[in-house]
Image (tube, rainbow, N blue to C red; front, side, top):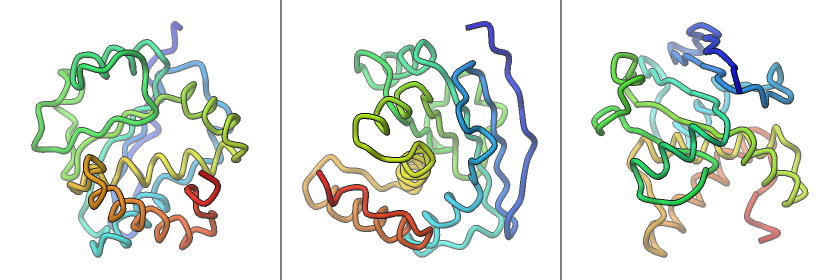
Length: 171
């Protein structure tokens, strides 16, 4: 614990603005993350241009993820990614920073553990969780089978455009 918020600054890729906040000591391969490319791929798969879009990505530890997961989803424990679309009720610390798309909370320890358990590279799994969360910000979900199939197809399309294999092929 004890990690402070580090804002890497807003970056842009074709007018896509992403503010990344690292608030965890669990930061393996931090420098290899390509947030703009991953979010742009998700937007492209969904038929949206990244031009003029903005969002915040907050990379957290287990405690913050667990607190948000329990407080906003009534689910126990930390989770890999949480998406707060801009029009949703955001946590207080994100309310002033809400972008046009919204905010993603990525739990690095969970993503790291899942990548190891699934035999995937950490960066590929982090890209997948970023694409997955970005699609949630656009209104996609996986509650019903039909919704899940549509969302997974978009994820696969986005990841393939990045040269990342289908994350569902071995599951």
